[in-house]
Length: 636
Image 1 (cartoon, helix red, strand yellow):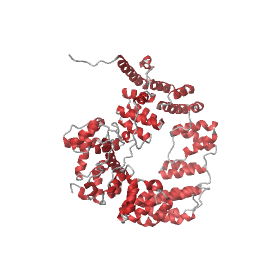
Image 2: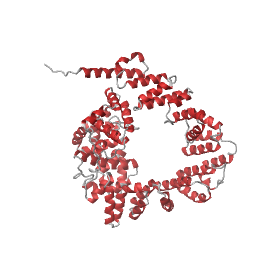
Image 3: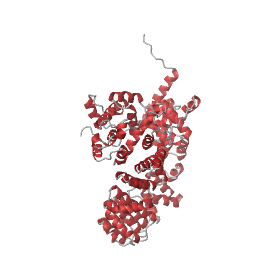
Image 4: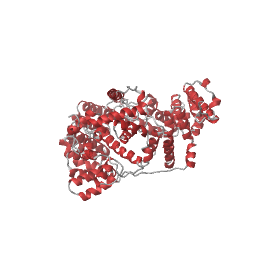
């Protein structure tokens, strides 16, 4: 006789309550109140979600005191933010500005809400309304119609005049918003004809910047005009723009901030476009600009040219924060080593090796020492864990998971993580890991900036599946986990803007091709959200990339991100050493991706070994020593 599981009465009651809540929430979204068994959900932890829809449906006629009571009751939930946002828009649309201010807690997020908020302040606090309205006005893009009353009133009061219109016109020019430009030109008051003529001349011919009068228009017009014109000229013809700037810069009355911006643009585009004739000017101005991004570009150019003395000089010119990063300490060590200063090189490598990153691990390899994980561990006793289990935000998240509302559950959890203290965030991460909510574990550490909490930042998500399919495809399962961690942060429902799906972010076309080659049933796009299906196909695809590049995982990982065609081209023109190859990758996204995946692989392998890094290598001997050129291609 079969033995059937017996559910306790409390468990049956909980299931019935969840079922009633699921039905009630669906009905509430559709404003079908007659379908809701209110008595069945009154005591449910998610009752506030049904109430949210009920109150929302009564806006804008709802008394603000009722709204505020709800906001107070659910201050620890995103429900409070959502209802406040809806109420501000509904009250604003209805012109109930006193009610809007009664439920607001300062400047809101979002342009429409901000425009209504400052409209509400026009009579209550004119100075604040003017300041906020001018900030909303100064954009190169069209603003929503909800801002019209605010802008029209401020213009009528003289708070937005010719100068503000001209400033916005320049911003619209830089943004390429010709329609907005035409409108704003028509709104300029008398006295701006000279400035408008200069603008039209420059729009037709950027090189006319050396011939346009330096004092066109009312006070301040010329500064904005020349700044915007130089931005356009620099993007169109950087070499000619620098030549023009050298001629006109001494004659212009510009603030230091405007001059800095123009010089930065000229330096950036000169380096990105590799304009040799601009190099001397760039090198002469980089130290003065003290811009970390520009100096990074300059170091990378020096690396491409094997200018080791230049690498040292430009790394030393960096601001303190970026210069101390493992990446630049590693390259400082490499340059010193190339120039024969082994002792100082080891100091730089040691500074890099103290950090947990691709270059930190590469520096440790050069020194022959274990990797520094800098792992921060936390433990919680059972009594405290029980307290955490009873936190309202935790209870709501768990209930939303039970009724199949993962999107709402994520919102609850992220809100709680953002509001939590450091200790509370750790407790939340611990709870999520205990429940197997791997994506929430990772996001908790990100929101709470718990960068050293490795057991939570890199949880053993789907490790059995990664092991199984890694073995079948002959791929290191920790490499697969590193890819999935970088691609989706272990969210099996992740979808990219271009349509990549699931843990390993597979495109449906790629999944179909891999399935055809291995005789698998072609998955539907929805099936790619299933971890098993996604890992099975992703492991086969990275195996193909590894084979394509003669077993080299570094090149294979680059191809997984950027596509094998691009990597093939890069290898035909690449430097020979692995580190120089990584630094030569032209796409920053892929450059960072390769470093992250290979470093993540080390972390996952080490955590599986209780945090011990001895015997774990980021790259094997062939990956460190092989030539990174076309010889890596298995099919030359």
